[in-house]
Length: 260
Length: 349
Image (cartoon, rainbow over all chains, first blue to last red; front, side, top):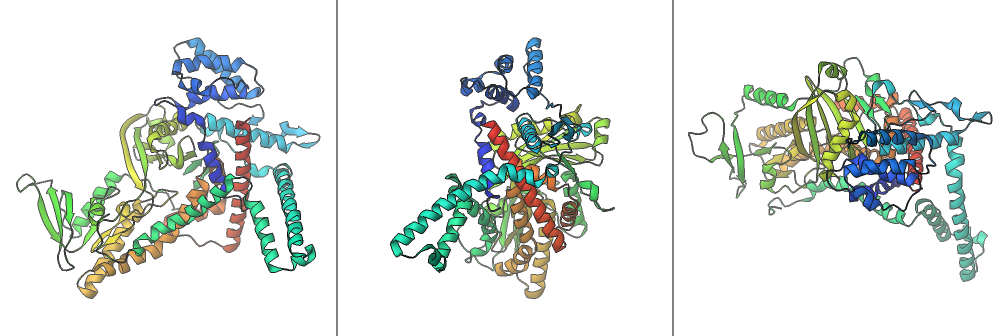
């Protein structure tokens, strides 16, 4: 739970690193420039230079789409839309502003996932539901859709049972962290034993060793990647910043200072 | 009020409204002139003018000198710039406050709020007769929300941001796109943009000059609400000055700080800090925004939000329900974060 709050800010830094945003010349419509990159990535033709793709003029972007869309496409289903739309747009010739492809999935019915289509071996395949929802969110992030009252989204992630989340996401991470903790613990115990001669059982009785153990556990939980150290520091700064700004007016005791 | 997530999950806030409760939509042009004429009818002297500068007094016994260019009736007759000597100054001149600059109140970081007033055909307006919408998502704002607020005979469509100010037009286009079917046939009649302070100024009281409202930086985070706080801080400051005059006859900086600032901070700083925390947790990423909208579907959240919003005070909930809410928030954030990580993983494939 302690790693939760860094994660949203972490995610925001991750999503803000989307290279497309930096390379857009002014005046480009957001969704147009993203479309070539997304279909190119999904169809696994990574050789195309993203820089070149993004810098194309709007008309060239429309031309690129049919080429990219018809290449080998492992994603399958949802991409039928951009092919059809792009073909229509290219067919029109003059159409520079392409229609935004809407999210379509046969399992997405009436604003929610139809669980009857996710049956696997008698029960619901929750992994597939999580996958499908992740794909839908990714699609909508790339191609935001206008809302309409008759196609209201009512899917609530809380219908996915807790053990499905744990089995898929917590257990591998827990295995990794416990492995790290075990490795660090074993070698620290050996190291301290070789230095001081105190065995493992007696080490646990010592306050200093218990503190080190606590620090090691907290460290393994909070710092999972190298970037986490910076993120934690920034988080701490941000947390106290707003309060400092409110207290600023009380810190100035001499009222006759010069103008700022 | 409907809150819409990046994946268009909608949370309808009006489901648990008490009978007489409502979220007010405001036309500033109407409110401002009403407040002004009400003050005048209560005995205030209205002097239509443009304040050019403020001379600070050389001692606590000397007055402030306001240099202004009169406008309105009889403006052409007298000299171009006039001067007015006053004892106490209350700076209520908004985010670009000249009073704040002249008294050396310091600077604050601002967000920009960009809004277009759109006149819709009658069918479109009928849909917004009792509906206001808030859109969250990276496409409409990286750190705030986009809105469609009905204003009597037109709607205001806008968005705001602090982190991506140069991209405001792209964000506005995205906001319009999100509401496109409902704005069909609309005509943009006015475009407005305004800076919104993100935090209070370093010095809100300097000498015998106090700042209120946007000039002081009293804008709540997360909701961007500033109108109530502007009016309330103006009233508290006025009350404080009157109290000091009754007790001591003369206003000093320490008195202003004690009577106005201290009381304001005691009453509202907690609310502001809580909203700042909410903004940092829930507006940080698309995943967090999904969690926010999911949580807002909960009845307890809606009730607490309304009570706090209507009374401008952190509503005191029941402890057991608060714990339940904490548990649900953790669950929602966890699920949304996991899905967010899945999305990033898919993106990097």
